[in-house]
Length: 369
Image (tube, rainbow, N blue to C red; front, side, top):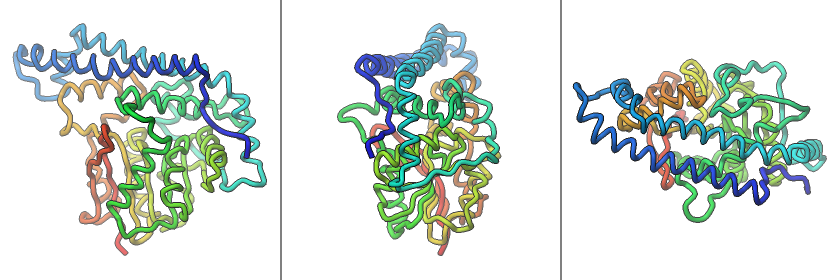
């Protein structure tokens, strides 16, 4: 198929986006590192009572000019990012929608797309501009719209560079999906999944990684954001991969019991709520087959692993960067959540795995045969 779904900046747009990535990296590393030094060497030692909690640390940090500078730079760097990718999307959106229509209606299509007018999109996705992305994940301004998904796709490399993950050769677009697949093999070496479900699949780039890692498996991706589901389907067809995408709530899918051998997600849970975490984990238990594996990846910012400074800056994300459940998710014991959902304590897990230079939180469990 000649039609292609992709975020495609021109020279000047790519240069601007690279600058924003470098600026965000400077704020994330240089400025935040200096802030930590100021806290450890000046603020904490001079406090009347040594800070023991995030709130104690915040009370010391927030009046300080360097914290205020860090917060301002972080806030405005996010604005710069969305403005930079929007330029590319505005220039290419019409041809990208035409490409989606061509791919989704082709007689040669390999996968499928299923949309649901009955789906009730819950908070925070329905009420919050996650990451302060204009329009959030679900805004539609035209027929067959994929604008917000195209914008999100444009931030992936930018975020990787801003987090120090762009050193050396550029990682493959499906690198995180391939990494999750490798952890699945590590945790369940005897498992050859015939069916795979990717919850909260977003743009579908990582979903395609599962199809490449397990080419004989039937792979399905679900999400509540319709523009993302369209984009993901178009992307899979562009790549010539047979993957199915559906607009569904991960906590209340329409699949039959024990439909999947492997259930995965990538950074989905911290965009939900505590009640939704319970629902999704219970749904995973219902959907996974005996002998199957549930394997979720999310942010590794649990308070016991983080210094007080990082706890304060992470909580800033909740208050000012469209991450209402960031700290709430980090406070949960996800092995305990898996056990509550039905997994045996000996088969449930909450661990950490690295893909240099990043560390991720993995959790889930296996269902006994």
